[in-house]
Length: 109
Image (cartoon, rainbow, N blue to C red; front, side):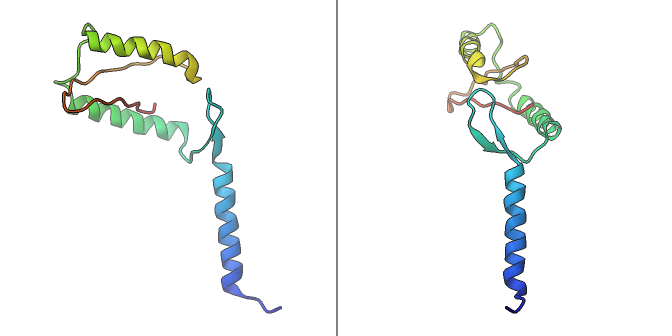
């Protein structure tokens, strides 16, 4: 059988991609589900720190005081969720007062 460069290239590249994906599958703590993650913990923390700083700068006037009842309500929900999440460590949270949008998010790191 003659050598076919195109076929061999597809097999090699496809196999390499399959291996790369396979080595970046991890089990999520808490839920046990599988996910794809190609970012290191250090890089994820760096991205999280940058996103946190940008969010705080953008919404500094809309961030509610910890004494606000809405902030305290989010804290109660967080206190109930964290033990079941499998996530460890201290959590800092802020509530943004935006009447046009009801949303929640988590920044890595």
